[in-house]
Length: 399
Image 1 (cartoon, rainbow, N blue to C red):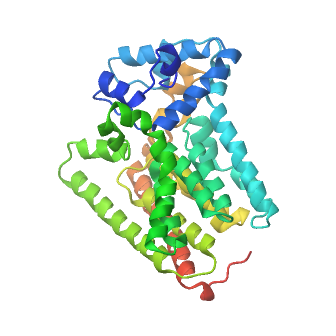
Image 2 (cartoon, rainbow, N blue to C red):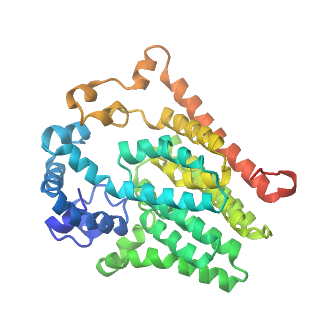
Image 3 (spheres, one colour):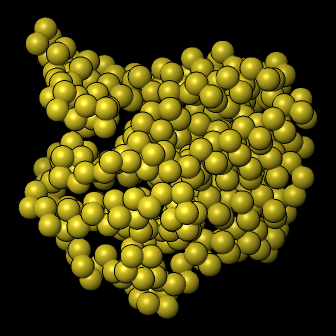
């Protein structure tokens, strides 16, 4: 609903607008490029649907007037739309474009005989793509496309790949890790490494220009908005200790990964970059203090490129998604409540799967097992990838 403000109220710089009008909220998670990209799609929407913009405006009005936390069922109940399904489809068109573009890149990998055609099925039916992108409406599929594109370009020219990584980072800043890894692996001198980092940061920096002009402080904050919000949370005792333990372990893990990427000497720099990037992002989604389900999409393109076999890929991503869901997706609005547009009254009242299980056995047992298994699965993959990086002669991967 916020990108619609670009047209309905002429809001050009969203960060300052949110800071001024909603100082206590956590709305500035999204980068300026995300705001402008989705606002751009409003133009053709005006031609296709005369209800979309008004619907967004009414949703926004309900948001600012509400007195408590609202969920999908509340928005559907208070904001009526006779063309709901058409407008929901329009809202997801950017995701569909990114998804189809990703398939085109995969076909290029298939054409070069790096991947086999069966991989397309693994992508099409990936639980994380279906759930996070089309059911939950998260836009992580867009930076995932640019990451996939970047790795395709990296096979020919690291500098064009760095531009693609920079665009991905302008949508979600986790791709800054990949820029650093490419620079460490491909840069022959310190000067060249710094040059590569600079090139990769250009798209990210350009996307921040509107914020820099309005309020430089907000542009600095936008680098790590969720980390900023977390640091402001009044925690004490074990939750506070746990947060810092996560950060310390994550920091050490990433340092080791970057160090290995920098010292490993191999003719196949592309494979080294892919391996180090996969390990780094898996560490992030496993060890960061705050991780949500759709972050699994960050690693998804790299999992496909590294594992390569469709069956292995699908088994891994399905197990990873199910284990993550066991402790991340516990509320109605992220389970059957996602179907409330079909029947709001019915689906919003359904008990969650964890509530049903809890009637038989304490669900905490299942969520704890799921959490530990999720960590074990991810760290097992990291171990295999790291061993492969360091001792390629002892592990022969079938192509």
